[in-house]
Amino acid sequence: MNNFKAVKIAENIYWVGVIDWSLRNFHGYETSRGSSYNAYLILDDKVTLIDTAKVDFADELLARISSVIEPEKIDLIISSHVEPDHSGALKKVAALAKNAEIITTNPNGLKGLTARYGDLKYKPVKAGDSISIGKRTLQFVPTPMLHWPDSMVTYCPEEKILFSNDAFGEHFATSMRFDDQNDLNIVLAEAKKYYANILMPFGKQAQTALSALGNLEIKMIATGHGVIWRKNISTIIDCYKKWSSGEVEDRAVIVFDSMWHSTEIIAKTITEAFAAKNIPAAYYDLKFTPLSDIVTDIFTSKYLIVGSPTINNQMMPTVAQFLNYIKGLRPVNHKGFAFGSYGWGGQSIALVEDELKAAGIEIILEKIRIANVPTFEQLEEITKNILEI
Ligand code: FEO
Figure 1 (cartoon, helix red, strand yellow):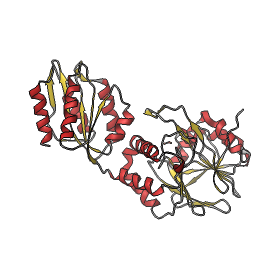
Figure 2 (figure 1 turned 180 degrees about the vertical axis):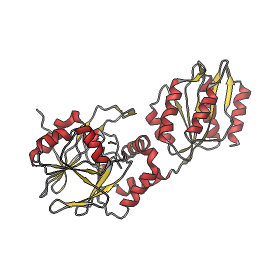
Figure 3 (figure 1 turned 180 degrees about the horizontal axis):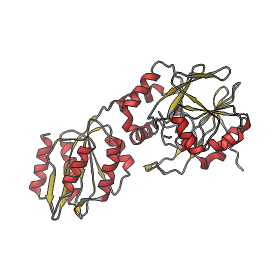
Figure 4 (figure 1 turned 45 degrees about the vertical axis):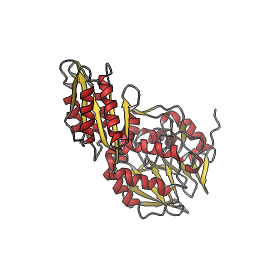
């Protein structure tokens, strides 16, 4: 038995989501501050639930709903996104709300929900569709690839609330629901990390969605994860405009692994050489920093420099994993080069360079290959070459 309660966010509108305090891994994304799966309940002529939560948290979701109204009285369930962090408890809610229609996008939401949950009472919608639920209207705006093909947001013009699902959210567990009740620097840092790890490949789609939302008057953004924006709405929208534009800063990120410190010494030399050019540089040994933190730094930094020693004719597995992750995230407007040390074959450095090219990174310096231990003269040469970039 639990006594979870709903949180009122506007007249007759409640947050009824769940808080995943202990989450530390979201499909590979290291979530050091946990997350929340936000759902919303609107009490109107038609009682409407917007999204559910992971299936493991169905009891918490149902308890919060029950603190306001019996779940059996829900008439409409809006499924903004098929991904199971938002739809996982759908079947359990639908089993109680037997008459509820489930609104989803056509065709991708319909296909995805049917594949996962079978034949429920779906009502597919498309761009421009809206529905009256009594005093309020809900307008549906598909936002494909933010974050899956089925994704959509819902706007309520009478309340000026945008229910944005994945967009504008963060993996951030907090007891306080609104942006102005939390440390804004932490929230924005987590929002950037979320964008980098979840939405980076979809900048064009994000720009399209921002255009579609551009004419709406918004006084609250009720997200699917983290805080509800009510004070810093223009701040988070401006961040999304910047992040989706591919704009990069004069900043270098050096990422490497090392076996016996030689590649590490080269990494330090490169880091200091960029600093000497007055370009801030971040230094990440892959043994110690999660990929999700590193890519958060990379996606707004102009330079990406990657190093690996050679092991069994290959790059280090940590570096291969990192480059594989980067390729999938498809960063834009980055420049870089490869470096590394080796004992005899030294194949890793060319392999790193190939993967950088495959990830769309423009190569701006001949790869640095150092046998055994770098000499003072070799390090001086590296510094000189970087100063000349
Ligand atoms: Fe929060 Fe793409 O699910």
